[in-house]
Amino acid sequence: TVLANAGNQVSVWARREDVCDAINARHENAEYLPGIELPDAITATHDPAAAADGAEAVVLAVPSQSLRENLADWAGVLPNAVPLVSLMKGVELGTTQRMSEVIAELTGAGPERIAVVSGPNLAREIAEGQPAASVVACADEGTAARLQKLCHSPTFRPYTNNDVVGCELGGACKNVIALAVGMAVGLGFGDNARASVITRGLAEIARLGTALGADEHTFSGLAGLGDLVATCSSPLSRNRTFGEKLGQGMTVAEIAAGTRQVAEGVKSCASISELAHHHDVEMPIAEHVTKVVAGEMTPKDMLFSLVSRSAKSERWG
Ligand SMILES: NC(=O)C1=CN([C@@H]2O[C@H](COP(=O)(O)OP(=O)(O)OC[C@H]3O[C@@H](n4cnc5c(N)ncnc54)[C@H](O)[C@@H]3O)[C@@H](O)[C@H]2O)C=CC1
Ligand SMILES: O=C(CO)COP(=O)(O)O
Image 1 (cartoon, rainbow, N blue to C red):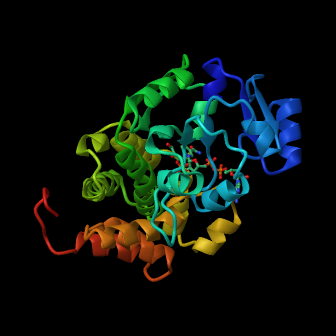
Image 2 (image 1 turned 135 degrees about the vertical axis):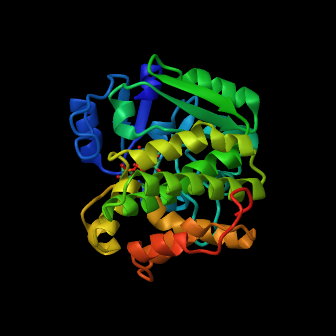
């Protein structure tokens, strides 16, 4: 919708032909965005080669844990010279790779061709045409500028950034923090608990990011603080909602059975904790969330365990 509203013709690939038919005939994706009329410039196809044919850019937006398999299926149909843009906010289980790393490995594309768009961009608000800003990150400033122009619409304001690592980690890690905030909400705790988790969450995201070479300023920007606040505050967030249900006593299996949409933090909490261990970075909230998701700790024990950790300085703790 953002790309169409910015004046582009958009071809969407979808797995199911009935979804393609509905998008083409009724301009609606009734299961995922009911009641939203998609722009006429969006068409859908089940054939990945047709979707990619003549593309100026390819935008990848599948659940993070399926990207590797999807890219393998699309081998040979992705155009050779155009930017590959990731909207995905997760870290791969097993490899601990960021999505740009998976894209580079599977397609052979260089960093000048791999970009990330990330920011406070809750899907329904974006699709309704509510105003929002975001970050287009690419190691190549020319590519970032071209993509910025491609998606700048009357309601969507993109900024460029060359910190791909920071933008990706900001997007993936905030989902895990949103799970923790959701748990606090589900347990009936108030704004002090939420603000404390958000703020300490940002500290641990920045700690991991800088250890992996990100620019610390990225984390006070739209792909860091901006997305963290939007996701942790909004009832539209799948991750926060998932956490809220955990806080209310439901199990991971029960919550997952009730939705088809992806809450990326439920899987990425484990890969992010693993990444932190590899780099000797302390991420207490992510580690505690991982234990709750694995059924090794209750949400209530998690929050009180975080509070009772050994006392630290704010700067270094
Ligand atoms: N929804 C949002 O507000 C935002 C989502 N994102 C990120 O975008 C990515 C995709 O999220 P959403 O589209 O919101 O998720 P979603 O769960 O709403 O939709 C996922 C889509 O992928 C399809 N899908 C599911 N499994 C698949 C597979 N194995 N292979 C191919 N396609 C598959 C589904 O049919 C559906 O069309 C995630 O990484 C998410 O964090 C980023 C910004 C905002
Ligand atoms: O990333 C998002 C907003 O920027 C969407 O968050 P959820 O996946 O938790 O809905």
